Length: 186
Image (tube, rainbow, N blue to C red; front, side, top):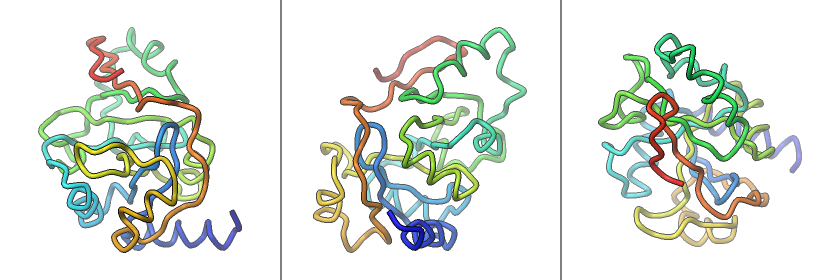
């Protein structure tokens, strides 16, 4: 990937665009989580119910703090929660009251992950903030595993397709509420 390509995808996200990019187990659709119009475009592209919420990925926990109510995470749960990262574990953490409902859905938690996929992690670093991360597929369909598959399904619907390989994970990230211990996927 050249610096020009990196700047292009970053500029597109900052301007409210939607990109497709490789993650641990599949290609994801992403946008700036602070841009409600872009988030709603992703929900429309996927035909996904807004009440389900979306996952945010980040290069480190600090990028998630604008959305997570860190003060509500009990001290005795912090180590077990954060020891999962970076990695293919999505945590359901208390959402700040100002976190948009298009991200949280009908929940008072926000699904967040510090990604272990170096390309996605580097993308978040370069953006300087978290990124929406939902599998590149139509609701109920198989997740897309390559840039070529994404181009076939979403070519004229996304603003940029990041070239690259997905990570070695064969399953989507495990989703855990580290406060209750409940596993929702995985």
